[in-house]
Length: 116
Image (tube, rainbow, N blue to C red; front, top):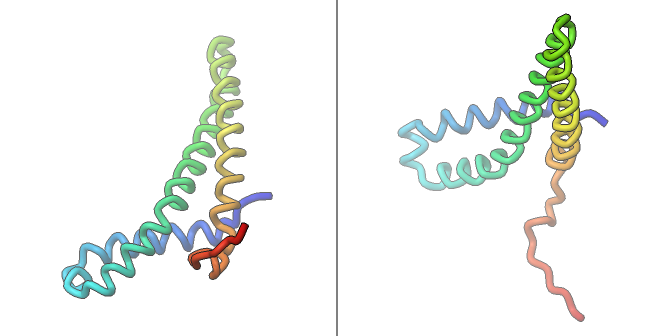
């Protein structure tokens, strides 16, 4: 299962929007709004970091495929190693992204009492 590209783009755009808003003097002056944006930024940070890792792994895979087309045998071996690592990284980050991008249960933030 692949991550939802449109959702990734929306999250990245929202993250950039929050980062730029946080430097606005009007937002800094409004402490409630600033705190709300800070919380949202904290929630999005892990997602955006994982998205960047995923995009980097995809880029490395493309580079490795380009190097594989070269005729140099030594470069071919290095490119094959890079390709294998990139595919593993892509798979790992895609799994993490799917979990991170899944909808959050509104009850997740509630406290729970467990009786034993």
